[in-house]
Amino acid sequence: MITKNLFKLSSVIFLMFVGVSVAFCQQENSQDIDAILSKLEKQDSSIKDLQANYFQTLTYFSTNEQFTSEGVFKHKKQNYIYLGQEKPTKQYSYIDGKNITTYVPDNRQAIVERWKDVVNSDMILTSVFKFVQNWKALKKDYTIELQEETNIDYSFLIKPINPKEKWNLIITIGKNSSLITKTSFNNGNFVVDVKLSNYKLNNNFSPAVFKFTAPNNVDVIEL
Image (cartoon, rainbow, N blue to C red; front, side, top):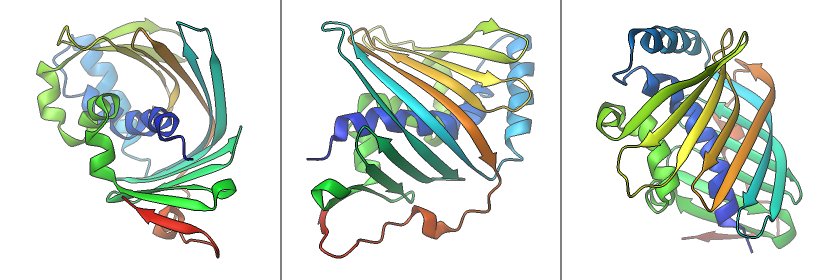
């Protein structure tokens, strides 16, 4: 069985990455923050696609259970994403902006869903996806603070204005690269920490990289 919830948590990484620079620059923040984010946006504009390794830790507060996963992701602007989880089990997800196909070799099964349906069915994904899809409305929905600045990066704290939404998101971005180095999502029940490393930029990925081709004897199920 495909662990869809864990996949959705992993997907937050990429949705944050895709939208973070553009979204921040639309917020009504102080002049200092505006200047910082405008600089990051300008740097980000030169990146057409990228590849990076990720290491994710999911921790449940009630039980102290901890789950880790790691692998590689590839992203091509605008909405092409490949997520290749290698540990603890192999699981591969392909997103072409319209559909998401999640393939688990051990199950000999691939599930195809409309990307819009996956995003809209998950509060976390919906909140993050607004950074790409609906940035003009973000000013009334979120607050963004510069939580910390070091010699090498900035850390931003994002929180919903709606008091019914109990979560916060910390995104750390390199000063010189405009690349996300780590994220932390906390909703009071669990925290998802992600570290990103070994970036490779402007690889000129073909769209075929983000398209799933089913091997023999693999069932493809469309939801």
